[in-house]
Amino acid sequence: MGRTRRAFTREFKQEAVKLVTEGGHPTAQVARDLGLTPNLLRRWKQDVAGDPVTAFPGKGRRKPHEEELVRLKRTWPRDAGAGFFKSVAAYFARPTP
Image (cartoon, rainbow, N blue to C red; front, side):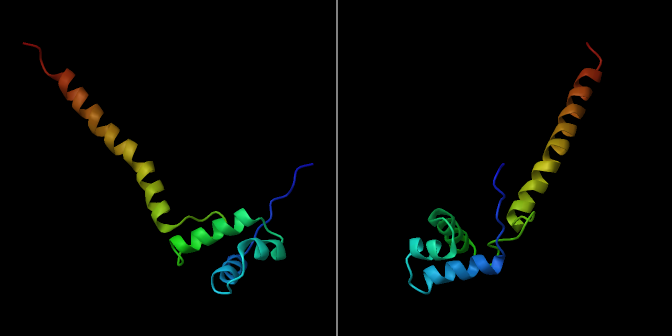
């Protein structure tokens, strides 16, 4: 059988990162004490260093800039494609000399 994926709360992640950054404890030691892999704790540390306010948005949620990017990707092809097809239709609708 496959392994189940563990889920950690935002508070747990923040406290784990705080132990490393403010507590001065080595990453490997904190990871071992909490039952994590050092790479996972390093990734959490990078997330907090990148943007502490929006780090760990939660299950199924995106950061605000990621939401905007998804929205733009969703709407761009429709807007760009409509203009292109209108211009092509206008070109072929012209009478030939």
